[in-house]
Length: 519
Image 1: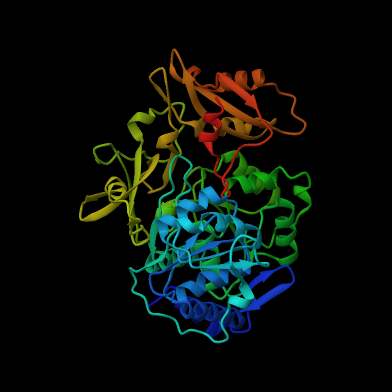
Image 2 (image 1 turned 180 degrees about the vertical axis):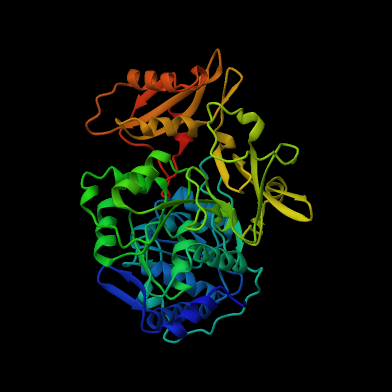
């Protein structure tokens, strides 16, 4: 392989008139899409932006994101995706740290870019939807060159994309993902479901600035000649309407999306039978959400697992190998195991999932580590972080996920919780996910998150933030008693607070540090 986009070029050659990208009433064929990426690449080259130069894409899920992404790669550049909800202060670090020479953004975000230009190496601002008042921005259509640039050759291990970790607990780190990392992941995910076919339609509910939506969904579609339907903003009603009207066949999402779908007042009225594969990733999927989704829509919901640093997917359930409550087996070609602090393998359980109330989690859990062709090259400019992230053992380079879990003799893995989220109360370890799973089973709970908060006697204690259902009758005291009835005394939340919504990232992860900062 010489460049990640050669896989798209193969789809263009095989299916020139097929739909590549569809938004509302606008459809781009593969031939038309490829021509626009070439013109974008040529426009970069005309401005001296090429091999190894960074181009930041600061857009929601729009056709222009897809064009700029593959156009940058055709020019030999490196894509730096940025959350379109970020403000000037947040993009300042990403732009200055990456050294991006160009930014593609919405007209409404041009002024945010202008605020930080002097702190960055940005030379070119491209605007979607007009110009901005605070920067010399070029409209996207005017930016495109009249002719197309031939694809610049790149080596398999050259960096293609530099996403940033979400930064929910600290300063975001640039993750160096190669052409081979991303190509391998897209193929592995396609193979998982028996192949993505040219007549498949993939709904792009996951944000393209995040590696999950970019690598698994967008590239999964385009590398296989399928149609990609980007969704600029998550809305359960609109997405369910789209699935029904367009006969969408494949959906990847995060637990918060599926929770929104099952709690939609008209959920039972939508026909989602066209879906042949639905996958949840990004964070742990509560069993209650999985089972209610399957009961409501008659569609199997599979769970997978991955991180930005692994391009992203490492484990998944599939039609041929599924176990509820598990993140699945490692992809073929990957290695994964559960280790202690001194990197000794933790013994496997016979078969999971185990009853976490009865099992001694201290004996069966450890950190999940992975090794394989989808693991990042490293963090950009952070040698100390790289040293902490990797361990050399058994002739392999192992990446530390920071997730606590266990594995069974059938090679299914189970995530208990994030290492940094574990609560130590009175000397006992409490994994928030276990409490959250119980809360989701309560009929008056629509959403929930559990965190540790300071406690003079215990060091930390358990607190639950609960979003009640519209017709909820339970009080916070009722929820506390419900947990106490179903959990060991030290695990139950001693504080329960009802809230209207939980603070989440665009990818659906609860920002627990914000909940803890409220204390």
